[in-house]
Amino acid sequence: MSVKPASSNRPLSPFMIGPYYKPQLTSMLSITHRLTGLALAFGTIFIAAWVTAAATSPEAYAQFAWAANSIIGKLLLIAYTWALVYHLCNGIRHLFWDTGRGFALKSAYASGYAVVGASVVLTAVIWVAAYL
Amino acid sequence: MSLRSPLSQARGLGSAKDGVGHWWMQRMTAIALIPLSLWFVFSLVRFPLLDHATMVAWIHAPLVAVALVLFFLAMFYHAALGVQVVIEDYVGNEGVKLVSIVVTKLALFAFGAAAIFAVLKIAFGA
Ligand code: HEM
Image 1 (cartoon, rainbow over the protein chains, first blue to last red):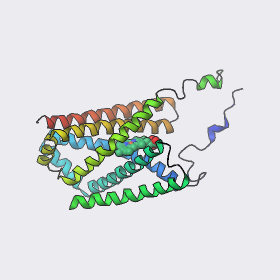
Image 2 (image 1 turned 120 degrees about the vertical axis):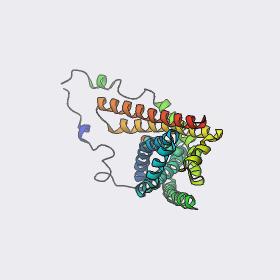
Image 3 (image 1 turned 90 degrees about the horizontal axis):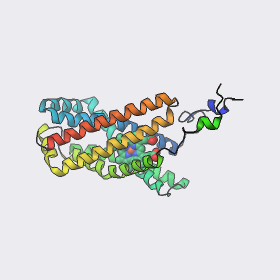
Image 4 (image 1 turned 60 degrees about the vertical axis):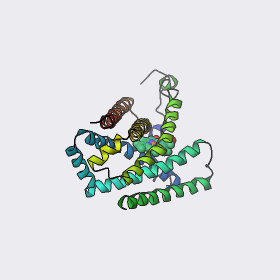
């Protein structure tokens, strides 16, 4: 009686992208929203460490500042900035979709390209401004 | 082999838990995070906050402390809701799924509490 449904060996999301499902801009941006969301969630640990160090002592804070100013710290901060700006811009795209608009293929692609461009430009602007 | 019908096995596993509330709070926190995260990045760019005295003086301003607390509330809540969805989508085993969700949520709330407490401690003068 109880036959295992054939669905059990179908490819599972997100592993259908590539072998079974052609990657397109829209699906790539969608998975990137998810990945940046996870990265930002992981980044909350560092934000908590940052303010906790400040509340602990000037010495603890100096240590945190040293790590943040190191090459690896800077690279992580730049990556974090891009992840935040991308997720912010694409999040606004999501919220716009939630109103039921913007789903036509042409507009979904236009907003997608806008998000990619804005995320790169804003990240560059933020880091240039930080050094002015 | 289970004698339970496929329908009875599916019952209670599907939706109709608190999906709408979850969805709604993900959007509410997302909307709150638009101005809050922009303000946060702007502040980091504008002030040399890696200097301890500057950082403490910055948080001493009541509006800054309130904005930081709001930012942290929205961010940790939004992160907890978001990570839950990702786990639900990819983790098939019910037990592993439950444990992963409980652990990430408790961890995120603990980090959130620590971050908010640190802001209040500085704001109230330590
Ligand atoms: C600042 C820290 C932030 C963190 C840690 C974070 C984290 C996350 C995570 C983990 C998800 C789940 C991803 C998924 O289901 O695929 C998510 C989804 C979402 N985020 Fe964020 N996020 C942040 C900021 C923002 C901001 C500023 C916005 C602004 C609009 C935003 C808008 C959204 C939206 C609309 C969704 C739902 C997307 C969907 O329906 O798939 N997030 N976020």
